[in-house]
Length: 147
Length: 338
Image (cartoon, rainbow over all chains, first blue to last red; front, side):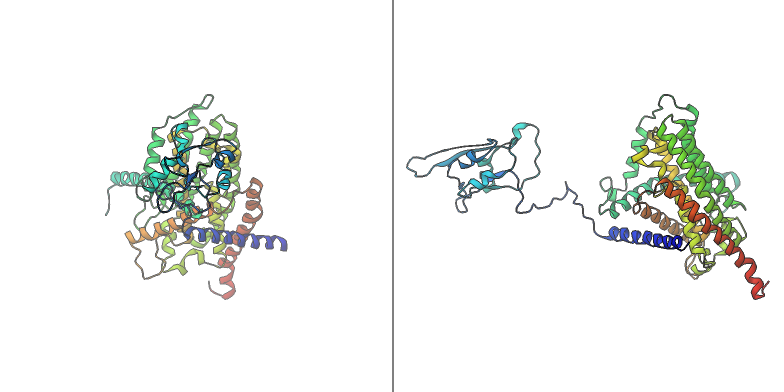
């Protein structure tokens, strides 16, 4: 009999404790972000698709067209071209294409780059009508970014 | 303002139906808001400011949907069942005193009438489940009936206790007896009454098939329970009936225990419109509690539900009945007051 009352009081008390927990959550500020109207800034270590890094002064790509990233890529989604300008010493990047449809974001290209010329972007709002929308021209992207 | 007879009926009829329908619509909105905030979300917000037009959009959607009648249903029962849930709930509003003068029919057996209509409600669920020709609906209907039978007993015992204290079944008279501040409310009539209030409130949750006693609609087991086969406004009418029943349950709790349209402190006005405000304030507070409870507790199991009723609520309510009777009859004898 005493067990019955113990259980009854314990149970009733726990019910009120539960109500206390939910009312506390109710008056707390909401945690959801109203996505299309407001977005969060991504963390610095977020791994989006890769992008080229420009020189801080000139804005030209740091890339020296060594092709290490192309070799490192296990799914062959990087292709780049470069040429030596007349009278110049170094090769200059003329085109850098990333086929993001096959990229697995492993980051081997970023690791293999000795010049710090590529990095992860923080883009996550990716949507496109066709496969073609995911063949990124990264050189054009960098030019647009640096203005 | 005194209305002559045919107009009075018409005005109250339209008023009550409008009150029930508007409340059903906006309580859904409130429920979604409360649920959202308890879970750290916002709830409806896109349709109109604070999502206030959401019920309108929901209503339009429900009305524009096709009323599907599946093969093999009982055509009459299938169509009558939603009305059998809604109509008794709306009928119960007839005797609810919203303020000292605002009551459709102030009859002497108001309390009895409400409980009579409340029993028809479960009949609607049973017929809807039976007529749907769907095994889940039948199981759900059977559960709803066993639950209602189990919870009507402690509820009625508590009501008998209350009637013993008040000596009347006229709801308005019951409220009048509780005049003059919250310490005169029947919830403080004797030391056992707060427990009686808890029992009554729990039973009204179970009677209206609300969480945590919504076994009839246990989605994980029974899809949507008795309204599995209903679409469009057929489902909408079931829903309206459910919310109307919640309002009735909370109104009864407010009238029986919390002083109805009386203000909590004696000197504040509670005549006419003020009374309506106090009454609706109490009712909406209780409805908020119903929602708060729904989004706090998980659904009980069937045996847990029946155990709670037969092993805890019924013995305790019987004990309260006995002790209250003793306090009313024996106590005056002991202290020598007739």
